[in-house]
Image (cartoon, rainbow, N blue to C red):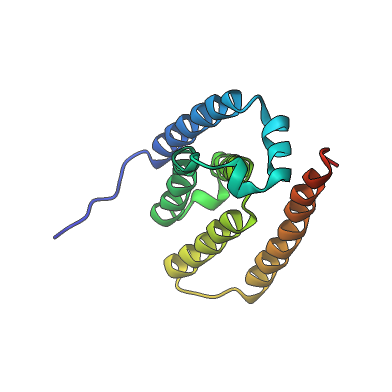
Length: 153
């Protein structure tokens, strides 16, 4: 069985991210906007997000596309479109569900995909990713905790 290299991964992943962004905007509109959605986390994310799992799934399609692009195209990490799509998708994933771990898991999967593709380990890059993950966990945790008082700090 032979697998062929997909053509135009940048265009296809950009389309997936745009589709996810459109669904993200529709979901945010249905929740009364981004600010009111984030404030609803103060009551508890399980209660605030009950029945919204399918929205979270569809907003993560962009991240799955970005991971696929990372695996398929060795030059993806030097393209600004890749990083724009990845950062946008990570932000949408966090804002949809408020889960820090969903962002961190995708960052770890991206690092593992890069390691498997390159077949080498760069200790400095892995340490930088680990520090970025810890910093991101703290920042996103503080944002989520600030909603408990009814305001976003």
